[in-house]
Length: 184
Image 1: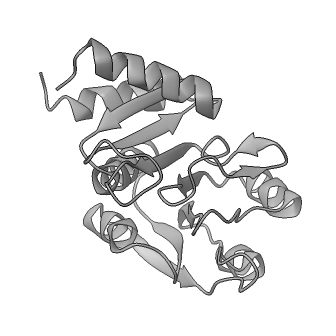
Image 2: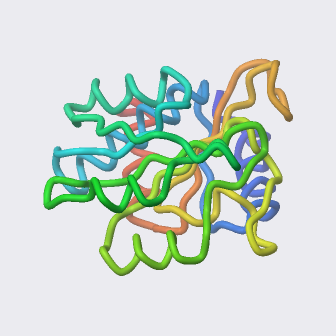
């Protein structure tokens, strides 16, 4: 399952997205779970801020990795998270903000990204429904510590099954490759 074609797809996907590393996994749900697992390995457990409008695998991946989900309402204009509620709910226990870009909409603003960076809060992006969508000319999925994509048959690009985790962080990528391989 990890043939030369998978490696070529990972490289081409990274180039298209504008990130350094992409790792193919069996599903978008697994991408979510592994992202939260890596977050736990790097930062420990605590709270992850999540939207109320998202896919169940986002929330279950948070819970299954011993994080407490902190729900915030959505912004009705872009179906993303209400930025004011996100910033209000950040605490010393916050380990990440897990953003879902719904139906091709961008969930970012300059101020939101600037504030999360200032507070040193990692972003995990669920881009399963928004392949190719952009913010300020940069593709969604290239902003956070990690981003997750799904290639399920009902999504924009299908491999029948499959998902991808993307990052610009070499350490994150190395951990991901080790846990994806299940010790092989």
